[in-house]
Amino acid sequence: MITIDTLTQSAIKLLKNLIETPSFSSEEDPTALLLERWFQRFEIPYNRYQNNVWATNKSFDTAKPTLLLNSHHDTVKPNSGYTKNPFDAHIEDGKLYGLGSNDAGGCLVSLLATFTYFYDWDSLAYNLVFVGSAEEESSGPNGLNSMLSIVPKIDVAIVGEPTQMHLAVAEKGLVVFDVEVSGTPSHAAHPNENNALYNAIPVMEWIKNYQFEQESEALGRVKMTLTQINAGQQHNAVPAKVVMVVDVRVNDCYSNAQIVALLQEHLPNAKVTARSTNLNSSSISKNHPLVQAGIELGRETYGSPTLSDQAVLSCPSLKLGPGDSTRSHTADEFIYVHEIEEGIALYIQLLNKIL
Image (cartoon, rainbow, N blue to C red; front, side):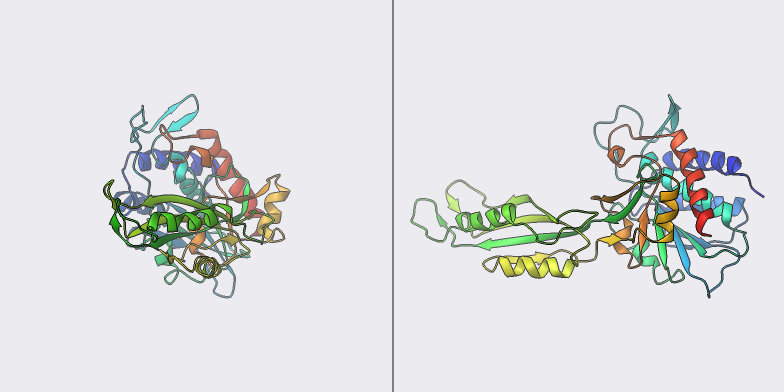
């Protein structure tokens, strides 16, 4: 039997290799190959669809419910604030530096080690499916969402994102709107009672002040934010329209479709268009055995304001992983080595309680 220590050291080595292999969203082929080599090394049959690599436990039984273990191997591009080489994986003062180390390489290799640990166990209460997915950072069409019709039906999921190994039992969804307000274009010197810019003011006031009624225990209220405004090209011309972008973070009391309908109802003088309604809020009951197992291990529950691949899942899902989300997408990104070691140990302890 493979020891936890062996898996942990192998996972840290894999993470170093992943960091040193660029894998921007939609360009993950080289890191997918690294995941394939892991499965080959441990003699685990696996599958690959585009840049998503997946496998099931040895004693998979269609009569049993299935638990998904998922994290992503794509990264954002490094920002201009880096003082270290983002592709140089090195340990300094207990910190493993490199792009994608925290988001979400540490989670990915920890879940992969955990899956490998349980791979050939018999008589599990749940089947296990591991998916190392692509295009999470870009919410692209060829990531976890493309796998849901390929992998066996999922009943519950652990999505690996940095939560300091606490239990994110709910996650806000996202709807981005283009809001267009029209008017009469004219020369600035002439009278105009239908100036699109002035027409946009009450729309912006409503966006600023509106309070969504239903408040979630885990996620609080829906948060709506005006993030972009585009209008006009020169000082002496009144534009024909104002186009605004509105970011709405949706709690688990509303569906995305309800949010769309609500904005369209309250803004009848504007053209309100949702870019997508696919990124839904998600949650899992605090009474679910997975959550209860985590609580027994001393982990805290909370609601996460940030988006992940949970958004494409329709089953109950728990966001859980080593690392700290405040380090994600920052310059000189890092994860503590001890966080990976503790993450693997806690994942295994957690699954031991329910499997």
